[in-house]
Length: 101
View (cartoon, rainbow, N blue to C red):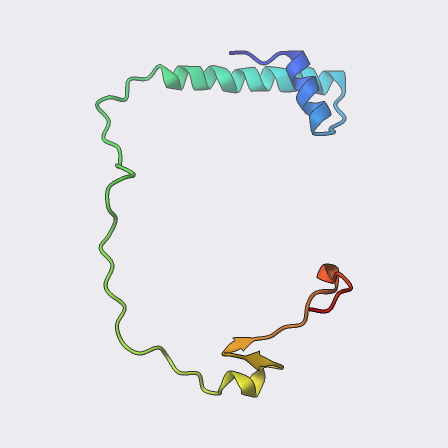
């Protein structure tokens, strides 16, 4: 598969890139060189190469044990507002709809 000058110009237009004719021709040559290298790599026989199996289970994890670490101070001591154990934060101005909920 080769990249044409029209392909490069089309992608540049989609990305809103201003390319000169010289740069578009250079990119076409560079991309075709890269694709040529990829074709050469695709022809390499890798059947005898051992690869990691992505579906194999990883390292066994230990079970979480012990109580959670206690805070030095209760959240009410440092949070501006707390309800049911959750910290309440003001709504961002960019997310305000003008309606109070």
